[in-house]
Amino acid sequence: MTIRPEWPAPPQVRALVTTRALGDMAREEGKRRLRALLPAEPVWLRQVHGNVVVEGKTSSEQPTADALFARQPGTVCAVMIADCMPVFLADEAGTAVAVAHAGWRGLAAGVIEATLDAMKIDSSRMLSWLGPAIGPEAYEVGEDVRAAFPGHQDAFSGRYLDLYAVARKRLAERGVTRVYGGGFCTYSDAARFFSYRRDRARERMAALIWLA
Image 1 (cartoon, one colour):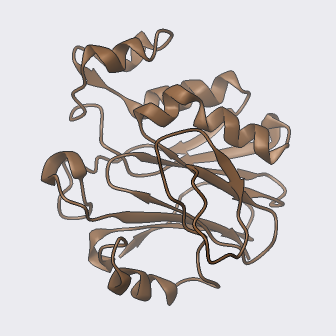
Image 2: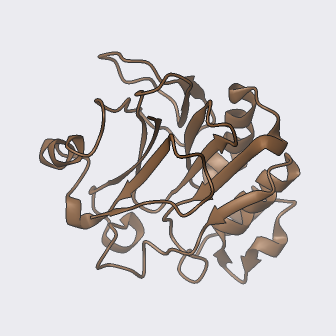
């Protein structure tokens, strides 16, 4: 019902991505099932496909942002996904974690770079894991999307965009060389994943990370 990242993060770094088997995370029933797997109520965001990053803090309000980080153990950072890519970040000492909601708009706006800046940790000490997203053989885009990535033409194959390739390049340009994951496709794997592009529906999965 969940996917756990395979990456060499310290043992106190915990992360997971829900699958459709756990339910729709946009509905209370799905969130209730998810809570049984977590140490605390997640910090949820009001996502707008931008590059605003906030620090995860317990609050009844949903910050308007597309990434959040935490240094305090037990603070669960969460983003909703249905084709956009969750980008997990953690430092090698396990002192901070983050997750960014990175569709093409967020990537073009610099949400990965903004998250690294907010964490204030040397990028050479960072690790990243790229979670489930629409894959490069399914993500057909228009010229407006191509124009948003002038330095990433190698991430395009005809009319198709590889979000994972863009993320890896953005991370590498900031000095993050230990990057894992990226072998998923929410669109083609209907048995495991919700996909907005495939179903035009509002069901969502969740990507979460915290320090134990």
